[in-house]
Length: 328
Image 1 (tube, rainbow, N blue to C red):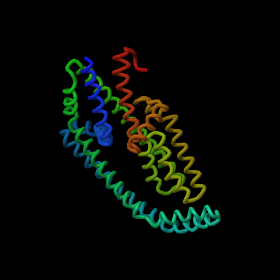
Image 2: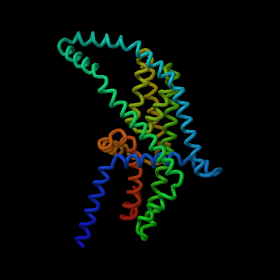
Image 3: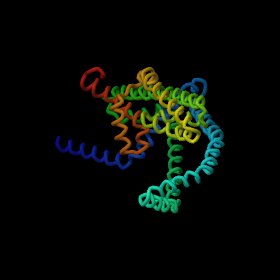
Image 4: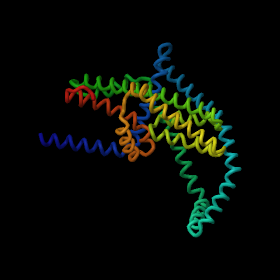
Protein backbone atom coordinates (compact mmCIF):
# COMPACT_ATOMS: atom_id res chain seq x y z
CA UNK A 1 0.00 0.00 0.00
CA UNK A 2 2.81 2.40 0.88
CA UNK A 3 4.56 1.65 -2.44
CA UNK A 4 1.36 2.37 -4.35
CA UNK A 5 0.86 5.65 -2.46
CA UNK A 6 4.45 6.65 -3.18
CA UNK A 7 4.02 5.92 -6.89
CA UNK A 8 0.83 7.95 -6.98
CA UNK A 9 2.55 10.89 -5.29
CA UNK A 10 5.52 10.59 -7.64
CA UNK A 11 3.23 10.55 -10.67
CA UNK A 12 1.37 13.60 -9.33
CA UNK A 13 4.69 15.44 -8.81
CA UNK A 14 5.80 14.59 -12.36
CA UNK A 15 2.46 15.82 -13.77
CA UNK A 16 2.75 19.06 -11.81
CA UNK A 17 6.31 19.57 -13.04
CA UNK A 18 5.27 19.05 -16.67
CA UNK A 19 2.28 21.34 -16.16
CA UNK A 20 4.56 24.06 -14.81
CA UNK A 21 6.98 23.73 -17.73
CA UNK A 22 4.08 23.80 -20.20
CA UNK A 23 2.06 26.49 -18.40
CA UNK A 24 2.06 28.80 -21.42
CA UNK A 25 0.71 26.03 -23.66
CA UNK A 26 -1.96 25.17 -21.10
CA UNK A 27 -2.95 28.83 -20.97
CA UNK A 28 -3.30 28.95 -24.76
CA UNK A 29 -5.40 25.78 -24.58
CA UNK A 30 -7.75 27.32 -22.02
CA UNK A 31 -8.04 30.46 -24.13
CA UNK A 32 -8.95 28.26 -27.09
CA UNK A 33 -11.68 26.57 -25.05
CA UNK A 34 -12.97 29.99 -23.97
CA UNK A 35 -13.08 31.18 -27.58
CA UNK A 36 -14.90 27.95 -28.41
CA UNK A 37 -17.52 28.82 -25.80
CA UNK A 38 -17.91 32.28 -27.38
CA UNK A 39 -18.27 30.71 -30.83
CA UNK A 40 -20.82 28.23 -29.49
CA UNK A 41 -23.53 30.93 -29.37
CA UNK A 42 -23.61 31.87 -33.09
CA UNK A 43 -22.58 28.36 -34.21
CA UNK A 44 -25.40 26.84 -32.16
CA UNK A 45 -27.94 29.15 -33.79
CA UNK A 46 -26.63 28.63 -37.32
CA UNK A 47 -26.29 24.86 -36.94
CA UNK A 48 -30.10 24.63 -36.77
CA UNK A 49 -30.31 25.53 -40.45
CA UNK A 50 -26.96 24.29 -41.82
CA UNK A 51 -24.25 21.69 -41.05
CA UNK A 52 -22.16 22.54 -37.99
CA UNK A 53 -18.89 22.66 -39.94
CA UNK A 54 -20.36 25.17 -42.40
CA UNK A 55 -21.65 27.24 -39.47
CA UNK A 56 -18.13 27.38 -37.97
CA UNK A 57 -16.64 28.50 -41.31
CA UNK A 58 -19.33 31.16 -41.70
CA UNK A 59 -18.66 32.51 -38.19
CA UNK A 60 -14.91 32.66 -38.93
CA UNK A 61 -15.57 34.50 -42.21
CA UNK A 62 -17.84 37.01 -40.44
CA UNK A 63 -15.20 37.50 -37.73
CA UNK A 64 -12.46 38.05 -40.31
CA UNK A 65 -14.62 40.48 -42.26
CA UNK A 66 -15.47 42.40 -39.11
CA UNK A 67 -11.81 42.71 -38.14
CA UNK A 68 -10.90 43.87 -41.66
CA UNK A 69 -13.71 46.44 -41.69
CA UNK A 70 -12.71 47.74 -38.27
CA UNK A 71 -9.07 48.02 -39.36
CA UNK A 72 -10.10 49.95 -42.46
CA UNK A 73 -12.27 52.25 -40.37
CA UNK A 74 -9.67 52.83 -37.65
CA UNK A 75 -6.64 53.23 -39.95
CA UNK A 76 -7.41 56.86 -40.97
CA UNK A 77 -7.92 57.80 -37.32
CA UNK A 78 -4.61 56.23 -36.32
CA UNK A 79 -2.87 57.97 -39.20
CA UNK A 80 -4.31 61.30 -38.05
CA UNK A 81 -3.15 60.64 -34.50
CA UNK A 82 0.36 59.87 -35.78
CA UNK A 83 0.41 63.13 -37.73
CA UNK A 84 -0.76 65.03 -34.66
CA UNK A 85 1.97 63.37 -32.62
CA UNK A 86 4.59 64.36 -35.18
CA UNK A 87 3.48 67.98 -34.85
CA UNK A 88 3.10 68.12 -31.08
CA UNK A 89 5.96 65.75 -30.22
CA UNK A 90 8.85 68.19 -30.86
CA UNK A 91 7.08 70.92 -28.87
CA UNK A 92 6.53 68.57 -25.97
CA UNK A 93 10.17 67.46 -26.15
CA UNK A 94 11.41 71.06 -26.03
CA UNK A 95 9.19 71.77 -23.03
CA UNK A 96 10.47 68.65 -21.27
CA UNK A 97 14.10 69.64 -21.89
CA UNK A 98 13.43 73.14 -20.61
CA UNK A 99 11.80 71.70 -17.49
CA UNK A 100 14.79 69.38 -16.92
CA UNK A 101 17.25 72.26 -17.27
CA UNK A 102 15.34 74.14 -14.60
CA UNK A 103 15.74 71.18 -12.22
CA UNK A 104 19.52 71.64 -12.02
CA UNK A 105 21.95 68.72 -11.67
CA UNK A 106 19.22 66.08 -11.20
CA UNK A 107 17.47 67.27 -14.34
CA UNK A 108 20.78 67.14 -16.25
CA UNK A 109 21.29 63.50 -15.26
CA UNK A 110 17.76 62.62 -16.32
CA UNK A 111 18.28 64.35 -19.65
CA UNK A 112 21.52 62.43 -20.27
CA UNK A 113 19.79 59.13 -19.44
CA UNK A 114 16.93 59.95 -21.79
CA UNK A 115 19.42 60.82 -24.53
CA UNK A 116 21.19 57.48 -24.16
CA UNK A 117 17.87 55.65 -24.37
CA UNK A 118 16.89 57.61 -27.47
CA UNK A 119 20.16 56.64 -29.18
CA UNK A 120 19.28 52.92 -28.90
CA UNK A 121 15.96 52.59 -30.72
CA UNK A 122 16.90 49.21 -32.17
CA UNK A 123 17.19 47.63 -28.75
CA UNK A 124 13.57 48.57 -28.05
CA UNK A 125 12.11 48.16 -31.53
CA UNK A 126 13.34 44.60 -32.15
CA UNK A 127 11.83 43.06 -28.97
CA UNK A 128 8.62 45.03 -29.57
CA UNK A 129 8.37 43.67 -33.13
CA UNK A 130 9.04 40.11 -31.95
CA UNK A 131 6.42 40.51 -29.22
CA UNK A 132 3.85 41.82 -31.71
CA UNK A 133 4.44 38.91 -34.12
CA UNK A 134 4.30 36.41 -31.25
CA UNK A 135 1.08 37.93 -29.95
CA UNK A 136 -0.55 37.86 -33.39
CA UNK A 137 0.49 34.21 -33.86
CA UNK A 138 -0.98 33.31 -30.47
CA UNK A 139 -4.27 35.04 -31.30
CA UNK A 140 -4.56 33.13 -34.59
CA UNK A 141 -3.71 29.86 -32.83
CA UNK A 142 -6.32 30.47 -30.14
CA UNK A 143 -9.03 31.27 -32.71
CA UNK A 144 -8.20 28.15 -34.75
CA UNK A 145 -8.19 26.02 -31.59
CA UNK A 146 -11.55 27.47 -30.55
CA UNK A 147 -12.96 26.68 -34.00
CA UNK A 148 -11.83 23.06 -33.74
CA UNK A 149 -13.34 22.73 -30.27
CA UNK A 150 -16.73 24.18 -31.21
CA UNK A 151 -16.92 22.23 -34.49
CA UNK A 152 -17.24 18.88 -32.69
CA UNK A 153 -17.30 19.29 -28.87
CA UNK A 154 -18.82 15.86 -28.30
CA UNK A 155 -15.67 14.15 -29.59
CA UNK A 156 -13.51 15.90 -26.99
CA UNK A 157 -15.99 15.13 -24.22
CA UNK A 158 -16.03 11.43 -25.11
CA UNK A 159 -12.23 11.37 -25.29
CA UNK A 160 -11.87 12.81 -21.80
CA UNK A 161 -14.69 10.63 -20.47
CA UNK A 162 -12.87 7.50 -21.67
CA UNK A 163 -10.04 8.29 -19.24
CA UNK A 164 -12.38 8.25 -16.22
CA UNK A 165 -13.13 4.99 -14.32
CA UNK A 166 -16.51 3.53 -15.24
CA UNK A 167 -17.92 4.05 -11.74
CA UNK A 168 -17.10 7.77 -11.91
CA UNK A 169 -18.50 8.49 -15.38
CA UNK A 170 -21.71 9.97 -13.96
CA UNK A 171 -19.65 12.33 -11.79
CA UNK A 172 -17.63 13.36 -14.84
CA UNK A 173 -20.83 14.00 -16.82
CA UNK A 174 -22.20 16.20 -14.03
CA UNK A 175 -18.96 18.15 -13.70
CA UNK A 176 -18.70 18.59 -17.49
CA UNK A 177 -22.26 19.86 -17.75
CA UNK A 178 -21.91 22.27 -14.82
CA UNK A 179 -18.60 23.73 -15.99
CA UNK A 180 -19.93 24.16 -19.53
CA UNK A 181 -23.11 25.79 -18.24
CA UNK A 182 -21.16 28.06 -15.90
CA UNK A 183 -18.80 29.19 -18.67
CA UNK A 184 -21.66 29.80 -21.11
CA UNK A 185 -23.57 31.86 -18.54
CA UNK A 186 -20.44 33.86 -17.68
CA UNK A 187 -19.56 34.46 -21.34
CA UNK A 188 -23.13 35.54 -22.11
CA UNK A 189 -23.17 37.90 -19.15
CA UNK A 190 -19.77 39.43 -19.88
CA UNK A 191 -20.64 39.97 -23.57
CA UNK A 192 -23.79 41.86 -22.58
CA UNK A 193 -21.81 43.85 -20.02
CA UNK A 194 -19.07 44.66 -22.54
CA UNK A 195 -21.64 45.84 -25.10
CA UNK A 196 -23.41 48.11 -22.60
CA UNK A 197 -20.18 49.62 -21.28
CA UNK A 198 -18.68 50.17 -24.73
CA UNK A 199 -21.86 51.78 -26.06
CA UNK A 200 -22.23 54.06 -23.03
CA UNK A 201 -18.58 55.15 -23.18
CA UNK A 202 -18.75 55.86 -26.92
CA UNK A 203 -22.01 57.81 -26.61
CA UNK A 204 -20.79 59.81 -23.61
CA UNK A 205 -17.47 60.72 -25.23
CA UNK A 206 -19.24 61.69 -28.47
CA UNK A 207 -21.58 64.01 -26.56
CA UNK A 208 -18.56 65.47 -24.73
CA UNK A 209 -16.91 66.25 -28.07
CA UNK A 210 -13.90 63.98 -27.51
CA UNK A 211 -12.13 62.89 -30.67
CA UNK A 212 -12.01 59.22 -31.73
CA UNK A 213 -14.96 58.42 -29.49
CA UNK A 214 -15.82 55.26 -31.44
CA UNK A 215 -12.32 53.82 -31.09
CA UNK A 216 -12.27 54.73 -27.39
CA UNK A 217 -15.66 53.04 -26.94
CA UNK A 218 -14.23 49.91 -28.54
CA UNK A 219 -11.33 50.02 -26.06
CA UNK A 220 -13.83 50.21 -23.20
CA UNK A 221 -15.71 47.26 -24.75
CA UNK A 222 -12.60 45.05 -24.69
CA UNK A 223 -11.33 46.45 -21.38
CA UNK A 224 -14.54 45.42 -19.61
CA UNK A 225 -13.55 41.78 -20.20
CA UNK A 226 -10.87 42.16 -17.49
CA UNK A 227 -12.57 43.33 -14.26
CA UNK A 228 -11.14 46.37 -12.43
CA UNK A 229 -7.77 46.44 -14.22
CA UNK A 230 -9.34 46.65 -17.67
CA UNK A 231 -11.62 49.50 -16.60
CA UNK A 232 -8.66 51.65 -15.56
CA UNK A 233 -6.49 50.69 -18.53
CA UNK A 234 -9.24 51.41 -21.08
CA UNK A 235 -9.92 54.86 -19.57
CA UNK A 236 -6.32 56.10 -19.84
CA UNK A 237 -6.25 56.52 -23.68
CA UNK A 238 -9.54 58.43 -23.59
CA UNK A 239 -8.27 60.80 -20.91
CA UNK A 240 -5.05 61.38 -22.84
CA UNK A 241 -6.96 62.16 -26.05
CA UNK A 242 -9.25 64.54 -24.16
CA UNK A 243 -6.26 66.22 -22.48
CA UNK A 244 -4.78 67.07 -25.89
CA UNK A 245 -7.98 68.95 -26.74
CA UNK A 246 -8.57 71.10 -23.65
CA UNK A 247 -8.93 70.91 -19.85
CA UNK A 248 -12.71 71.10 -20.33
CA UNK A 249 -12.70 68.00 -22.52
CA UNK A 250 -10.51 66.23 -19.98
CA UNK A 251 -13.03 66.98 -17.23
CA UNK A 252 -15.93 65.81 -19.39
CA UNK A 253 -14.11 62.60 -20.32
CA UNK A 254 -13.32 61.91 -16.66
CA UNK A 255 -16.99 62.39 -15.77
CA UNK A 256 -18.03 60.05 -18.60
CA UNK A 257 -15.71 57.25 -17.45
CA UNK A 258 -16.70 57.66 -13.81
CA UNK A 259 -20.39 57.62 -14.77
CA UNK A 260 -19.97 54.58 -17.01
CA UNK A 261 -18.25 52.56 -14.31
CA UNK A 262 -20.82 53.64 -11.71
CA UNK A 263 -23.44 52.19 -14.05
CA UNK A 264 -21.36 49.01 -14.25
CA UNK A 265 -21.02 48.72 -10.48
CA UNK A 266 -24.59 49.57 -9.48
CA UNK A 267 -26.62 48.36 -12.47
CA UNK A 268 -24.80 45.97 -14.80
CA UNK A 269 -23.09 43.85 -12.16
CA UNK A 270 -26.15 43.32 -9.91
CA UNK A 271 -28.65 42.76 -12.74
CA UNK A 272 -26.55 40.84 -15.29
CA UNK A 273 -23.33 39.34 -13.95
CA UNK A 274 -24.80 38.29 -10.61
CA UNK A 275 -27.43 36.26 -12.44
CA UNK A 276 -24.76 34.70 -14.67
CA UNK A 277 -22.03 33.52 -12.26
CA UNK A 278 -21.36 35.47 -9.09
CA UNK A 279 -17.67 35.84 -8.22
CA UNK A 280 -16.76 37.68 -5.02
CA UNK A 281 -14.62 40.80 -5.71
CA UNK A 282 -12.04 40.09 -2.97
CA UNK A 283 -11.50 36.51 -4.19
CA UNK A 284 -11.27 37.72 -7.80
CA UNK A 285 -8.68 40.39 -6.99
CA UNK A 286 -6.46 37.94 -5.09
CA UNK A 287 -6.82 35.31 -7.80
CA UNK A 288 -6.09 37.84 -10.57
CA UNK A 289 -2.94 38.90 -8.72
CA UNK A 290 -1.78 35.28 -8.48
CA UNK A 291 -2.51 34.62 -12.15
CA UNK A 292 -0.75 37.84 -13.15
CA UNK A 293 2.34 36.88 -11.16
CA UNK A 294 2.49 33.48 -12.88
CA UNK A 295 1.28 34.20 -16.43
CA UNK A 296 1.69 38.01 -16.66
CA UNK A 297 -0.99 39.82 -18.73
CA UNK A 298 -2.43 36.63 -20.24
CA UNK A 299 -3.05 35.28 -16.75
CA UNK A 300 -5.01 38.38 -15.76
CA UNK A 301 -7.14 38.05 -18.90
CA UNK A 302 -8.21 34.46 -18.17
CA UNK A 303 -8.31 34.82 -14.38
CA UNK A 304 -12.08 35.34 -14.14
CA UNK A 305 -13.27 32.48 -16.41
CA UNK A 306 -10.76 30.11 -14.82
CA UNK A 307 -11.99 31.11 -11.37
CA UNK A 308 -15.55 30.43 -12.55
CA UNK A 309 -14.52 26.87 -13.51
CA UNK A 310 -12.75 26.33 -10.18
CA UNK A 311 -15.71 27.69 -8.24
CA UNK A 312 -18.20 25.47 -10.09
CA UNK A 313 -16.06 22.35 -9.64
CA UNK A 314 -15.44 23.09 -5.96
CA UNK A 315 -19.16 23.52 -5.32
CA UNK A 316 -20.05 20.31 -7.14
CA UNK A 317 -17.21 17.90 -6.31
CA UNK A 318 -16.30 19.02 -2.80
CA UNK A 319 -19.16 20.93 -1.17
CA UNK A 320 -22.08 18.94 -2.62
CA UNK A 321 -20.66 15.45 -3.15
CA UNK A 322 -17.97 15.15 -0.47
CA UNK A 323 -19.45 17.30 2.30
CA UNK A 324 -23.11 16.80 1.42
CA UNK A 325 -23.88 20.50 1.77
CA UNK A 326 -25.67 22.91 -0.55
CA UNK A 327 -23.36 25.39 -2.36
CA UNK A 328 -22.64 28.54 -0.35
